Image 1 (tube, rainbow, N blue to C red):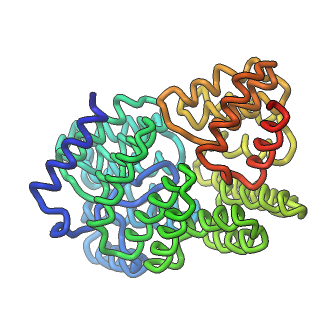
Image 2 (cartoon, one colour; image 1 turned 120 degrees about the vertical axis):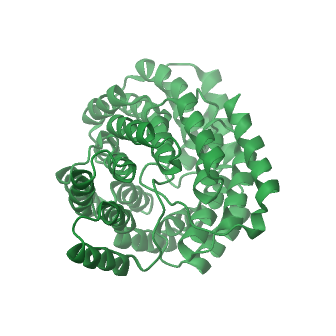
Length: 426
């Protein structure tokens, strides 16, 4: 089994190379999973300026055009500003104009397609890059991200395995960790993320690894470990929005909703994504405050994403649901499902159908969301409420018990509903 092979290969690489002695920075994140290419350090604006200066002097330097495109893409990720996407595309296509079919530009365009959520295009571009250079670990990373989001677990694992074989390191370890998490192997996923952490040098990479260790601990209801990892991550990089988002959940779990909202304000000030803004709106609702202004900002963020070439019916569905438009949420989620059969999309379809009063139709989708074995308290909660909507009280009881056993604080909005509903089923 390829997932088991991931662990074996990583352990072998650790013994061969010596994790403590291996330095380097080989990856980061995109909006989708675990990034596409070598992530620049905090000196990103200086790097972009240096690339631009080089190209003024040597306009035919196709490698620098590709590097500039990737730097613009990283700038978009770091700032949650999709207006950098057209700049990234222009530089990457210029690289291809100068040197047709060059793998770095093809892989860069694939990473851009992933960021825009055009995962089918990302897969095709990664395959083109690999046809030109079968040794490109970067292209395998792009391919792994695309196959994961398209709901193709075996090809995704295979791509991660190739990446590990070619270049065991931070980027491949983090993707392997994510792949294992998708299959419900949280302990193995945490082990690999700790190996990735041992390679991290730059503050952003340290924060990245701590963030995902915190997320894994939080999903398992281990608040103490999640808190520790968040603290360590913020000590490395106090600007890491993902860590502040996790901190908001920990603060909410402790009953400090006002502090949680302060945390989320830091998130949306730095990375105003639809996901973060919808979470902020739900937190405001839990605190008894009006979320309408935040939802309007989320609408604007979604429009900006689409205006710069992005497609995100999943985010639009979540936004419609938060705004009380379940029928629209169903339509959008199903449209996303037509493009990609990923577990997260299946869960969104299921929950929007349930919200629209169509629980029987929702049931197969929530079961699909659980198919790989990932243990997610939010999905278990959704399954329990959907089962109750179909009249299956026994399954509802089991799933709500599972959600609260995994993490009794999984959501300041939904966890109390789960507890109250379960008490009524006893």
